[in-house]
Length: 178
Image 1 (cartoon, helix red, strand yellow):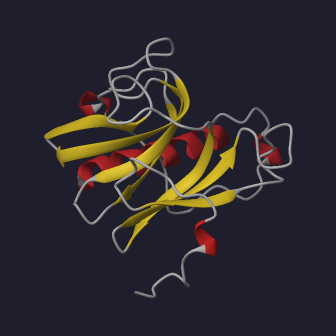
Image 2 (cartoon, helix red, strand yellow):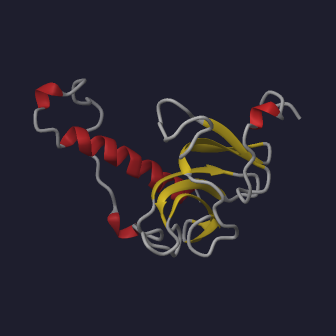
């Protein structure tokens, strides 16, 4: 599992470094070149792709030892842009670095449960046996459209991403209270 996390972190770093590296005008860089990092190379021989068409995978460890997260605009594991496509889906990744598999928990192709609302996620974290996700709903209450900069809501799941409770702050104490 640590391998999966390292790969995902590497890809995030790669995206950031690639943008700086391929800037057409180096004089416009927001800060000077690193004195410590001379180059960055990825070993693509280990690259695997399981969720064609799905993007924005952010992951968190849960108490059951699996990784959970959210994706946008695709069918998730085993799906495509046309097969199982949802605007928001929840995956689970099980196994170790040499033998891991992805499952669609909520939404996507052949999920445990179908998606029951649409939106986008800003991130997810597992705390005390529950999953918490920052959600930007497609149709926020009192709004006619989604706006990532105007409205975001914290939702929670106490069943490993199979169901989500809105307005979770109304029914729970401060994080960390049992």
